[in-house]
Length: 337
Image (cartoon, rainbow, N blue to C red):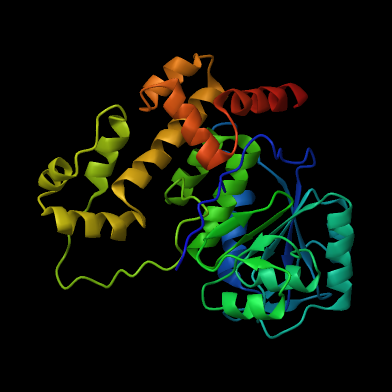
């Protein structure tokens, strides 16, 4: 599958709405995994401050008690009227890509979006947004086994078949399963910065950063024999961002041939050592810019970029902004808050 080289990490150019009200949409035959992922990410208090990140509410398309996957029946906070004052609406999946959304739901989403509400979908939720016309002229994604159908049904949408999530500012879509976790962490990172997102990821026991343009489908057959884990090596690399990466040395350190190491590295991370290290260095640079007063030269040095010119180049390529603008955006956000 082809991955477009697009700057899908968020930047302060697209600040989160001041409205912290986040409404989770539920429906008959609710996708419980996607729903649970969103509740875990957005409904828990931050472990450092003890305060919830969002004012969470749950709205249902149907009235009264309704069924969810796995034999569960639910009663929630209210109906579609809750969408009216939401700052963010999350659609955690949909019962089927072949089941149309109701006219009431379509109208409610269209009205919310026209009022400036940010709308997020996980997996088949993209089909609801497509039916509402909210994806027209935008990039979007869904589970890899349904993106062809999404493209056929909604030809005005630029479907990204291989991406795990796509951020279009006021509309964010993701693939299914674990990609929903990545989307939730991306949203928290966009709203609150890297440190809060990292704390959330640690609580959820998941990697803190996978960029949206990472491939959904990574062929990783179950090994016949237990494989050596690369976790200690990855931790060591994170602790030595200024150390040049020499593949042969890393392979030797892992006790593998070069070819085996590269294959295992891709299986574990979904990318190459160089691309992985670049993402880690960018994450470090963003954290330093958001939370400190170091000069750009010092940020470049501590994040392993060597020079401010290299740092600026990768910020432009990956994030579509500059280190100075990134820092300025977070300073302005804190002043407003």
